Image (tube, rainbow, N blue to C red; front, side):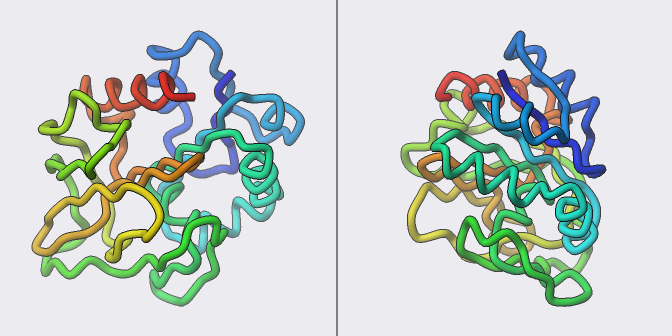
Length: 198
């Protein structure tokens, strides 16, 4: 079973619909027991870094995520759901993240923000997420991102007047800055790749 963590942020219904095309067991929940029983956890997110963190903490979602990782199960972060997995965010003010991945979320260098629309990725060597879809485009909506690669794991990059990290893959954490649920067939193929490696 795949649990999509409901903490009041993210395109929950769009994500649920997308995941149901690649798995017949998908649930949207904030219940710690349901999330703990899931084989994998999806952390969505839209909006500002601090607002998402505040909403997550209000349902003790930080503990749900950390317990899930401690059990060795896999997590997929999407958009701001990717960002909050890192140590800090600097959107309007400095805010603490979950720090389950090392790194800081900072403003993109582009003159025109937000970065909205379709863009390609440069899949990291050995990527499982992008297997067979290395040359596809994905849908982005963001002004902030991870600018430096993580040391332990696979880094996928995208260029928007400067390079940023558009996806990371480590032992049991995968995260993407774009929205796979809004990225058509390429997005569904990415979700299928993630599910096939659970």
